[in-house]
Amino acid sequence: MSNNFFQFKKFKIHQSSCAMKVTTDACLFGAWATDRMQQSTIENKHCLDIGTGTGLLSLMMAQKISKLNIEAIEIDEAASEQAASNFINSPWSKNLLSVHANIVSYTFPQQYDAIISNPPFYENELNATDNKKNIAHHSKELNLADLLTIIRSNLKSSGSFFLLLPFKRQTEIQPLLLQNNLKITHTTWVRQSTQHNYFRIMLEGTLNSNIDLTQDSTDEISICDDKKQYTKEFISLLKDYYINL
Image (cartoon, rainbow, N blue to C red; front, side, top):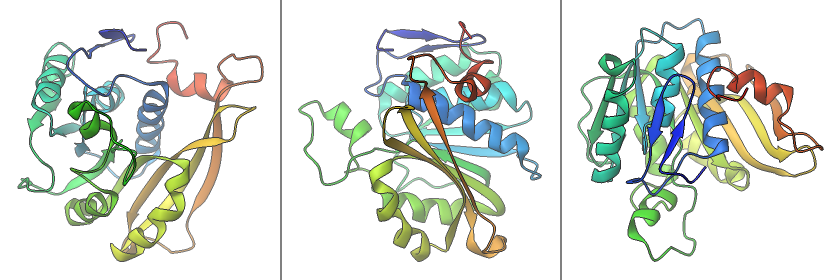
């Protein structure tokens, strides 16, 4: 998936200016989060996409949720401009806004019904020599504690947030959630295949005061089966996006 563009059924992602390219796990996350939003009883009107990169997650949500207005924040100027171009060339340009800004110092115009983020995966680990890759993959500009504080401050009391993280960070995030009065309501563990260990977690959550504390659930999904074919669960989520499904 490292080409200069990735063609979906209803939109195209150009990515030559973005350090973070379209990946299978990001596509799965976008489809999963959108599906969770559609199942929600909350009327989603305004969504914040933190660290939008190519604009992938915003476009996946816009395709399925017609009345959703999405504000997509990106710290890298070239990536923000490319996301803006991807938005303009999509069928949902009126519902999508690309903003070049540092989320830590950004002044938000409102609170949001939904906040989604595929944040930098690595914190206090070896950096790459490419600064753009460092920003995309490492959390020097946005660490997990800051991200959760931003979510807490800008999520409506009835809203939900969605995160994609490496599986190994599930323990790290628990005390940070408590500190920010946030609660995970659903966790999906992700495997590359049925033969692999978990490598990602997809989290749905809300403000702690908004729900019954006993209300949570967990499941799992494998991208491929033991024959290296997409699983039926993966196909169900991605069939409206991937051309060959």
